[in-house]
Image (cartoon, rainbow, N blue to C red):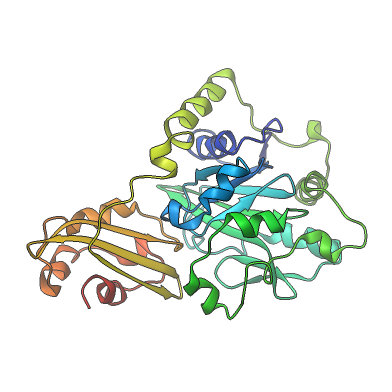
Length: 332
């Protein structure tokens, strides 16, 4: 494994651009590890409808960045008390939607600190039933990344104010609020630590040292940083990527499955599907547009939709959701 030094950048658009650039251009035969700490930001899952996940007034008043990532899952809040980690690998087979194979060092460090952390649900790390980490994954061709957050000393009140959880998600977990189910790592420690100190402990667990001269590292040349800047400009600092156009729809149905919430929106004119969009906090490997484009100009009836999606593996786009479950939303 080799370490990527992000030069203590705290701009979410730059750090997410560095992450994507690294997996596409710097990943060779060895796995990569990247850490970053962002200034106040909301990071939106790839398939989410941004405007419905945030409180726009709070975001504007607090000058919170809103940035969409390449992986699925739900929206998360980042600030200086939140450590973000990313493991990148070419070993994809059987590892997508598996978090135990990547989070071992993180759990080991938490256990060393005396914190009884454990993996829970789809993609969380919890302590005494409260979430301290959310994780997501992204796969492209022969490579993937598994990244996550670690709430060390985050402003949870601002997290609660800035995010707007869907009622179904709250109800499905049997809880009354975000505040009641999330926690900072420092709440379980008698001596608080910082996000930077936690990063150093994880580095030491993986490499046996904190000394950068003894840690195998990725060399980032000027051309690489220019590539990161170009990707930031074209994607992560781009309004269309982060927010997108909210499509018109006269049919909307949503349901929470084991794999996450799936929200289907269809624009139907003269009994034909003019446009289709699928939002949600689900995980998936494929580009959603590959699936929804199959529905354009299809007659709005079950047999026609089944025929249009006949050779589609829905689980490639929406993990753990079957074709029958998706059809139940598209055309009950």
